[in-house]
Length: 155
Image (cartoon, rainbow, N blue to C red; front, top):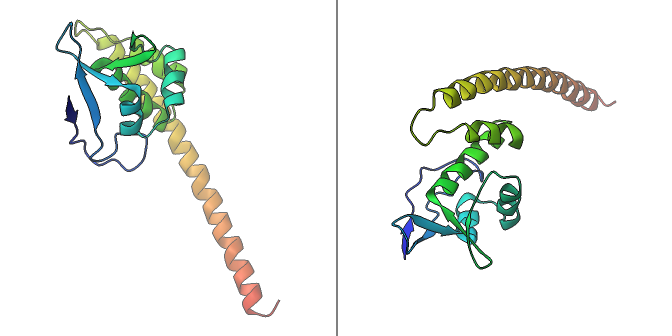
């Protein structure tokens, strides 16, 4: 078995951990890398239950060897996309729809157009949320300043 690593440093736990490794096994029927559930969970900083949930929702489709789930490079790439989509605010249903549009023959124009449209819409939603948060922060800063001034003046 060998290890895979060398991922860029990401700011949070929704991406592979810097220096994290997943054990790779070679499937005897092919040269495709196979990852065990615990290895992917550790690398991406998610729970085993999270990966099972994604499988139940049809987002991941690991192979089975008895009761052991064996994930492929494709599953690993899909997991990265799921976590990215989740991080930017997409529902799992939206993420699944976008991922399911993937055409393995390389003709992904439809997928790219849908991803662009959904990405632009989500960006507008996040910008509105940011604006609302900025207003709330400003109001809270004024309130905190007023309370500090009152305390400083012996209220």
